[in-house]
Length: 223
Image (cartoon, rainbow, N blue to C red):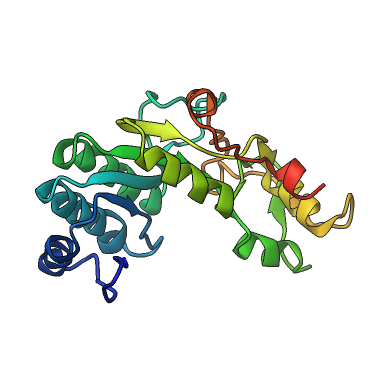
């Protein structure tokens, strides 16, 4: 985490986070820190930030993920659908959401999907990778999501809000779009059998009605 005019802070250190917040006294905080392999960053760090933000009465926008859902609903997930993660990372994010609702009840919790560019782009250009044709996400460009987060920070949004790309695409289709190919990309199936959340499309109807920011879909980004 970085606060304006400050040095980096380890979000796992509750005392250090609180000290920096009390020193900088931000009006608004957008919390994005996570590590898929470290629950202490993803969950405990989020709670430390929420506690510090609540202490100084700062507006908090917390970024969460589509994998707080299992993918077994077989329709796009809405904000009030039950959290049922099947991965350790998804569980850490879901636990952070639940605790945040108590620690900082006025916070916005923004669930998003795959952010582009990123490792997905490099993977699509690597011929040794095979991509699931039955794992569906709503990828978005990081700049669009960042603009939406800033807008949300100035709105009276409380609780979960889905902000993701306009297109629901499979991992395989996304790889094809990135590579500009219609064939030759290795594909595989059985995402759910492999323990992956296979269909975590997000219903972003509420955000699209509320926000001026337009979050583009993958097909528009790579056309």
